[in-house]
Image (cartoon, rainbow, N blue to C red; front, side, top):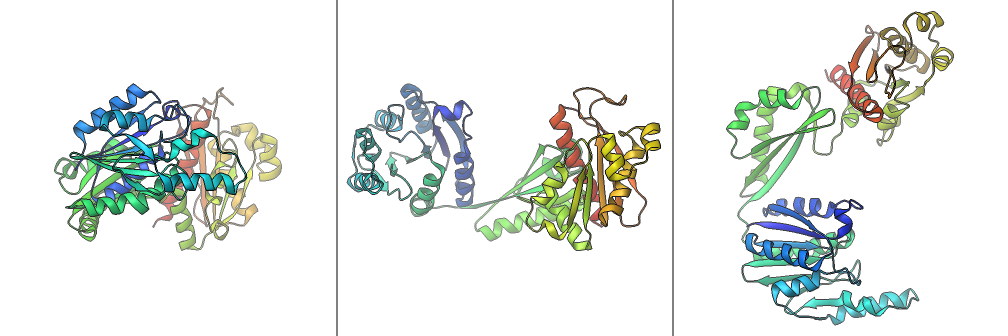
Length: 412
């Protein structure tokens, strides 16, 4: 079965809103064992919408359309559907009553164009929209099942769960279940990960493996099919064990797990409290971990000391050290971490000093970063990096690298 999603709306093409509907629908369809083969976005133009529908009817078994069901002239999904499906539209009385009741309940006068939202195709299986106005519709046209849904995410999701998914489960003999798990790795590049897993990737059948690079880390999506969900999950688990046997040192979690969340868990496991001293990162590191629920159990606090004067006055960095080595130096980063541990009474301290740009500072090029670590009574560590990119990119990469360093030091 080939499923296709078509989103109608010029606002999507202009980037005014993101097409989150397609992502969500794809996830739910994969769970049903009806994978999506194609996404399309088309603007509010009758010929282009109709053309998109025509192409979809030739290549897909299930076509899910979102958007274009509103009351205005540029809501063209019904018009295009009539052209391609050869169906007339008529007013759906229960939907019209619901629309009228909404305006009456809110003491508003209903404009005549709102009647358009109650229009449905002849012969359609109508899905009552309890979250909005325009109903959903399902039409069987030859070998193609058409699903028309509002573009508002809340309404679309409600109609999918209450009407579309039950309809598809009853209408199709679904032969397999699809399960995916995204594994997250940090401290290894995409090319190195792929090299380590080359034998598995080149010989993949079921499950499949797909490396995906993101900022400062690498993902590996495992996808398996099975006659049951449990069977597919068992295949995922077996492959995951094999993968981690090769690159497990860099693995920090799956799916929605974040690196800061993993660091929080590691701090909790050790019974450690964390403090930070930040210069050019401006508190971004501590903000990331404090945003997590339960952060107060592991976070003591952070100090943002941007200027040399603040490093002297707040962090007690000696004047001679700054005069001799500068604030963007191995020596300053080390002293920042050491003094933060003492000042904040923490087990683990991390420090950030560097130059984000756009100009050089203290003879150091933009992207020069020093990160210091002090963990319990171990010897302090300082790591130097040269990050590419603009000012914001350098700051974000430094923060991610700080979490990476902590992860690798705390995991054992």
